[in-house]
Amino acid sequence: MSHKERDFARRIRQQGYRFTPQRQLILDALCGLGGHATVDEIYEVVNATAPSINLATVYRTVRFLEELRLVVSADIQGQTVYEIAQPTPHHHLVCRECGDVQVLGDEHLQELAATLAREHQFQAELDHMAISGLCAGCQTEQDEA
Image 1 (spheres, rainbow, N blue to C red):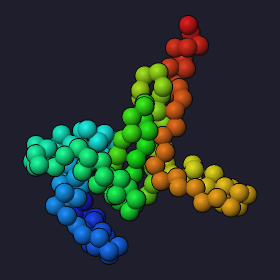
Image 2 (cartoon, one colour; image 1 turned 180 degrees about the vertical axis):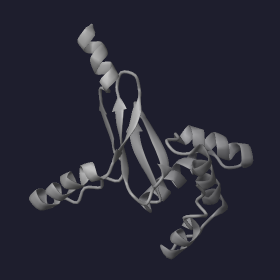
Image 3 (tube, rainbow, N blue to C red; image 1 turned 135 degrees about the horizontal axis):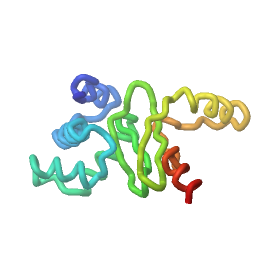
């Protein structure tokens, strides 16, 4: 998947911002890495093409893209990882023992978001969550121990 297919340049310009070469390189890197990339991993890819772009620029740009909701983040096993925002939100079940990551469809959290809005007048941003716990395999291992 390419960010060009999602026309992020147009989406950034429509919000009143410039689509800079740095933003393009960082989106290219995120697309190339395929998701769940740390800032350091993004920086390595960008640095190979454009060594003049420093780590601080990558941090600022990733946060900017996240504010525009073009990129989403999640904390997985103590690291913040980023990926291109998908048209339909998805989430992750992360095993705290073995590190296995399973994708969880958004339908499982839609009811929670509706409850929070209705009962607490709180608009939750549940675009990309990581829920930690134990996978079935690790639960079995613990039960047998």
